[in-house]
Image (cartoon, rainbow, N blue to C red; front, side):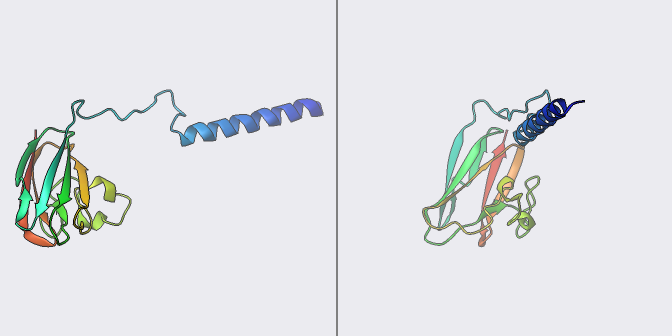
Amino acid sequence: MNKGTIFAVIIILLLAGGAFFMLRDKGMTSNVIQQDAPQNANAQTYTIEMTSTGYEPQTLTIQKGDTITWINKDTRPNWPASAVHPSHKTYPGSDIAKCGTSEENIIFDSCGGIKQGESFSFTFNQQGTWSYHDHLKASLRGTIIVQ
């Protein structure tokens, strides 16, 4: 091979390598493009208010893929989380030990007190009846029924 051919091969390899890494970072190195299909094409968002006397409504029935947003209407912080206090492990995959980790955004746990006027949202992708509580005042409880 002459120097020109070797130079051209090197350039082609560099361009191909760069394209590979760009596509890999975008998750497109295979023939299948993964898409996050919605769990529920008609997904709804519901609101539960956290008050000094508890959750309103205390029980809520939703569909798989629906989201609930808890809004703190109380003057003290509230910490909604999957039951059972204090481990927060009732909802599949949830665990208070995951707070502060890379899994924090996928568990049913606000992972800290929510101040007055602030909110926490969670999308329910598991069917069942899920009890929850306020970690800061465990006597305040609620139930989400996911159909």
